[in-house]
Image (tube, rainbow, N blue to C red; front, side, top):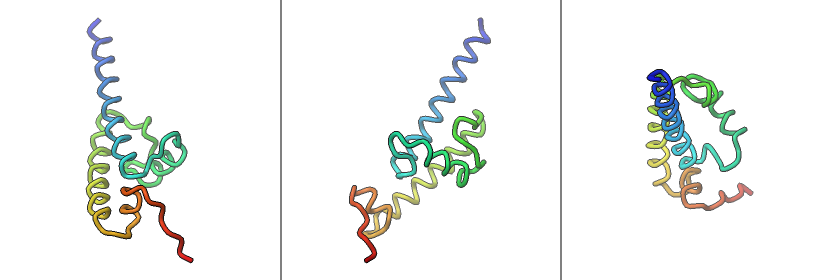
Length: 99
């Protein structure tokens, strides 16, 4: 019985850590609602261990969360400067054309 509880608790903790990653990714514009393809592509090319979110193990998620928190801090700093991609995203304005 205790093993089942441990597995259930571990699954809940995994879900919570994944939720943290997804929340930060959504706030920073990496993940868009209903678009897992772009997010998984980003994860495979730019995440710390270069794999999809569901493939991260419990202890690896802490490393990913650290990366995401750093990314969020950079995003917040960048969004404070008018005209940056982060500024346009944070203010919900589409970036003007280069023409």
